Amino acid sequence: MRETTGTAGSILHLVRNGHATTRGDLAALTGLARSTIAQRVDALLASQLLVPGSDSASTGGRPPTTLTFNGDAGVILAGDIGATHSRVGITDLAGRVLAQRRADVAVAEGPDVVLAWLEEAFDRFLSDTGRGFEALRGVGIGLLGPVEFVTGRPVTPPIMPGWNLYPVGNRLAERFGVPALVDNDVNIMAVGEHWADWRDEQFLMFVKIGTGIGCGIVAGGHVHRGADGAAGDIGHIHVPDHDDVVCRCGNVGCLEAIAGGGAMATRLSDIGLPARTSRDVVAHVLAGEPDAVRLVRQAGHLIGGVLATCVNVLNPAVIVIGGDVSQAGEVLLAGIREVVYKRSLPLATGRLSIVSSRLGDEAGIIGAARMVLETILAPAAIDAALVEAAAG
Ligand SMILES: [Zn+2]
Image 1: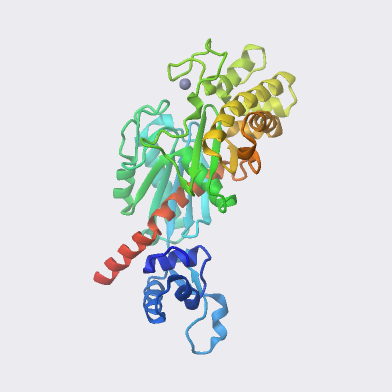
Image 2: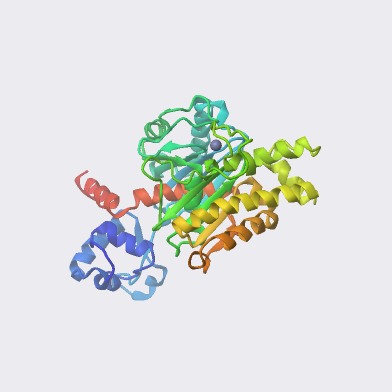
């Protein structure tokens, strides 16, 4: 028998995850009497979180045989605030994106400008999709920089003037009257990629290679934030033989100061290939410029060296490579793979997949919505909400 407490919340969990589709399944999995199951299922049907399955029409008067999770029972607003552009979206409770849009709103404009834009975009989603405030169940936001997850505040983010300790989560929770969760962008992207393609794996690393380099870790099926939310900051791991390079963090020889998109753009400009951003570097690679190809491959080797160490520590089943520089494709991926497979232990690489992000820019909003869904649909949260509904 699966580990389950048999409460209404855990019954919903069993149906949502496909472990059970009938009352009989639920009785078998929980060991509870059918009458108890019926009572809890009725509460979930009344709350609209469960609905009769599509095959139940032919049962002629008897209770429907199958149960389905109702993704239409509410909506989630999601935002991914980036260095040069941001993306917002609205999803249903199954995490399906109902609408989304991208805008050139940069985090450097400060919290008042960015959050005002975000709130207006959210208002418009609620009215355009016809769902309205009453359907809203939660808000999820990703920010590029360290975030104190519990309080929803960025903590000394390096390229976000005015954001330090700004109460992003509280502001959105008050504005929309629902739970609002805020996390580092790489954490939500890791959640998005994990949910979209690798749900059956418990250990995944998502590596974002853009202007800087960062990493989100899924361990045991959940985001691993570390004791203070600083886990996964691989961009500032020291790489040998580059102590002449000073990083924006103040240290020397950091991975992102050498292999990040910003560093590569500067290097290419210095040798006469004009480049300002990660995307310019990728454009040179895709145009077949030998110097750009060589530089990105070398960056792949350096990143691979750091990831080989991470693989020995964490033993992930999957490493997903994302961020603007990942658009360079095989040139980067081959460089990373060469070193990871050579330097990590055979047991750790036996079934390790190193792949490019499939969700691309969308990973952030899909992951942000997912983060909220896993919180508000957790068994204990559902049980509490049903108690409240019964009392109210
Ligand atoms: Zn650094």
